[in-house]
Length: 80
Image (cartoon, rainbow, N blue to C red; front, side, top):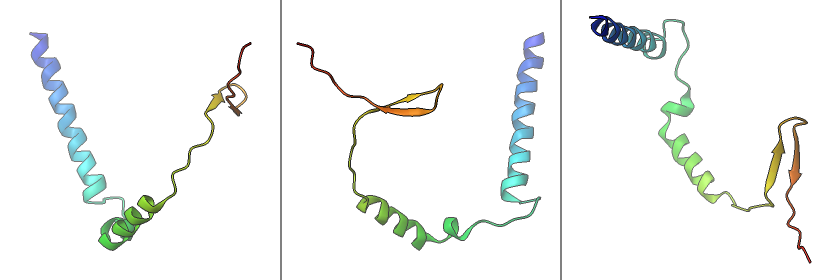
């Protein structure tokens, strides 16, 4: 008996979320416009071309210390 209420509430919340998302992003009820970087296809092609031409160089592996927020370069040691 309670499963139908839970499933119904789940579908209802998904429907409300969809309507709110479409109103905010598609209908732009709060104003704003879509940036030209998204609507301009030439901009996207040029961005892809530059990303493909980007030099890919790898450095030494780095470990992030979450406490002090410092990066440490990992060096391999040779044990004798």
